[in-house]
Amino acid sequence: MTHFTLNDLEALVADRAAASPETSYTAKLLAGGQGRAAKKLGEEAVEAAIAAVQGDRAGLVSEAADVLYHLLVVLRGGGIGLDEVLAELERRTAQSGIAEKAARGPA
Image 1 (cartoon, rainbow, N blue to C red):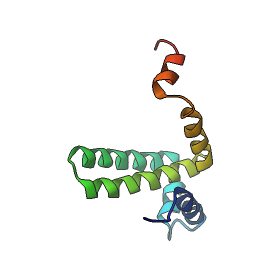
Image 2 (cartoon, helix red, strand yellow; image 1 turned 30 degrees about the horizontal axis):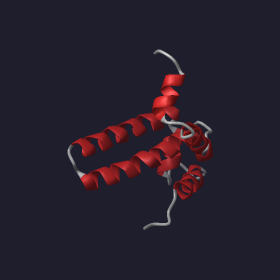
Image 3 (cartoon, rainbow, N blue to C red; image 1 turned 180 degrees about the vertical axis):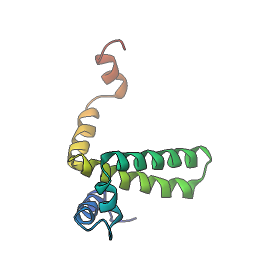
C-alpha cells in the first residue's frame, strides 16, 4: 500500500506550477490557459473510460492516475483547492444520492 495521497499530488502540482513552462509540463499546461488543461483532462477521462470498457486493468490504473493529475491541474488553474472538493463530497455523503436527488424535486 502506498502512502502517497491526493494531498501529496496537489502539493506536487503546486510546486511544479511555479516552475518554468520550459521545464515543467504542469506549468506548461497552466500557461496554456484553463481551456488547454481542461481539454487534456477530458482526453484522459475518455481514455480511462475506454480502458474500463475494454477490461484493461493496467490501462485503467494508468489512465486513472492521469485523470487525477489533470483534474488537480485544472483545479489549480481555477483557484480551487482539493479541500474544497473534499468538503463538497463530505456534504454530499450526509445523505444517500437517491434521497438527495429526491429532495431537489422533479427534473
